[in-house]
Length: 95
Image 1 (cartoon, rainbow, N blue to C red):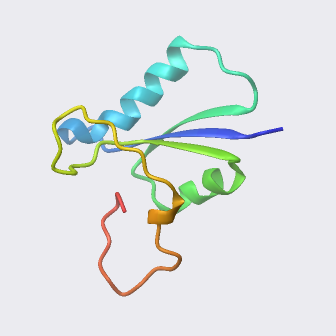
Image 2 (image 1 turned 90 degrees about the vertical axis):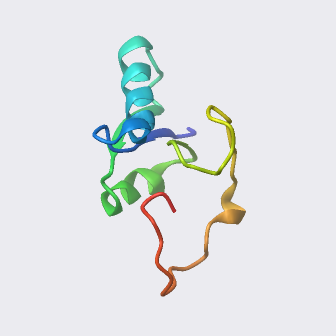
Protein backbone atom coordinates (compact mmCIF):
# COMPACT_ATOMS: atom_id res chain seq x y z
CA UNK A 1 0.00 0.00 0.00
CA UNK A 2 1.18 3.49 -0.79
CA UNK A 3 2.60 5.30 2.29
CA UNK A 4 1.90 9.06 2.29
CA UNK A 5 3.85 11.25 4.70
CA UNK A 6 3.07 14.94 5.23
CA UNK A 7 5.88 16.80 7.03
CA UNK A 8 5.06 20.21 8.50
CA UNK A 9 8.40 22.03 8.77
CA UNK A 10 9.38 25.20 10.58
CA UNK A 11 10.06 26.92 13.86
CA UNK A 12 6.96 28.39 15.53
CA UNK A 13 9.12 30.96 17.33
CA UNK A 14 9.99 32.81 14.10
CA UNK A 15 7.03 34.43 12.33
CA UNK A 16 6.08 32.61 9.12
CA UNK A 17 8.66 29.93 9.86
CA UNK A 18 5.96 28.03 11.75
CA UNK A 19 3.79 27.73 8.65
CA UNK A 20 4.35 24.02 7.99
CA UNK A 21 3.99 23.07 11.65
CA UNK A 22 0.72 24.97 12.01
CA UNK A 23 -0.73 23.44 8.83
CA UNK A 24 0.21 19.94 10.05
CA UNK A 25 -1.43 20.65 13.42
CA UNK A 26 -4.64 21.76 11.75
CA UNK A 27 -4.74 18.83 9.35
CA UNK A 28 -4.22 16.38 12.22
CA UNK A 29 -6.81 17.97 14.50
CA UNK A 30 -9.56 18.64 11.95
CA UNK A 31 -9.50 15.68 9.59
CA UNK A 32 -9.46 11.90 9.77
CA UNK A 33 -6.92 10.28 7.46
CA UNK A 34 -6.61 6.64 6.42
CA UNK A 35 -3.94 4.52 8.10
CA UNK A 36 -1.53 4.93 5.18
CA UNK A 37 -1.36 8.73 5.66
CA UNK A 38 0.92 10.13 8.35
CA UNK A 39 0.79 13.80 9.37
CA UNK A 40 3.98 14.87 11.16
CA UNK A 41 4.76 18.04 13.11
CA UNK A 42 8.39 17.94 12.00
CA UNK A 43 9.49 21.26 13.48
CA UNK A 44 13.22 21.70 12.92
CA UNK A 45 14.36 18.15 13.69
CA UNK A 46 16.73 17.68 10.74
CA UNK A 47 18.35 14.23 10.41
CA UNK A 48 15.75 12.37 12.56
CA UNK A 49 13.23 13.15 9.80
CA UNK A 50 15.04 10.83 7.39
CA UNK A 51 13.12 7.87 8.86
CA UNK A 52 9.84 9.47 7.75
CA UNK A 53 11.25 10.28 4.31
CA UNK A 54 12.59 6.76 3.79
CA UNK A 55 9.27 5.05 4.50
CA UNK A 56 7.25 7.41 2.31
CA UNK A 57 6.01 6.38 -1.11
CA UNK A 58 4.77 9.94 -1.50
CA UNK A 59 6.12 12.86 0.51
CA UNK A 60 4.58 16.30 0.96
CA UNK A 61 6.71 18.98 2.66
CA UNK A 62 4.91 22.00 4.09
CA UNK A 63 7.19 24.96 4.66
CA UNK A 64 7.57 28.69 4.05
CA UNK A 65 10.61 29.73 2.01
CA UNK A 66 11.53 33.15 0.66
CA UNK A 67 11.81 32.67 -3.11
CA UNK A 68 11.43 36.42 -3.65
CA UNK A 69 7.87 35.92 -4.95
CA UNK A 70 4.59 37.47 -3.83
CA UNK A 71 3.50 36.27 -0.35
CA UNK A 72 1.24 33.23 -0.57
CA UNK A 73 2.67 32.02 -3.89
CA UNK A 74 2.75 28.22 -4.02
CA UNK A 75 5.91 26.67 -5.43
CA UNK A 76 6.19 23.00 -6.39
CA UNK A 77 9.57 21.32 -6.71
CA UNK A 78 10.37 17.77 -7.75
CA UNK A 79 13.34 15.59 -6.91
CA UNK A 80 15.45 16.91 -9.81
CA UNK A 81 16.27 19.99 -7.73
CA UNK A 82 17.74 17.97 -4.86
CA UNK A 83 21.52 17.46 -4.88
CA UNK A 84 22.53 13.81 -5.30
CA UNK A 85 25.15 14.23 -2.57
CA UNK A 86 26.12 16.68 0.15
CA UNK A 87 28.95 18.98 -0.80
CA UNK A 88 31.26 21.30 1.07
CA UNK A 89 28.93 24.20 0.23
CA UNK A 90 27.00 25.59 3.16
CA UNK A 91 23.32 24.65 2.98
CA UNK A 92 20.48 26.08 5.03
CA UNK A 93 18.00 23.93 6.96
CA UNK A 94 15.43 24.58 4.22
CA UNK A 95 17.72 23.13 1.58
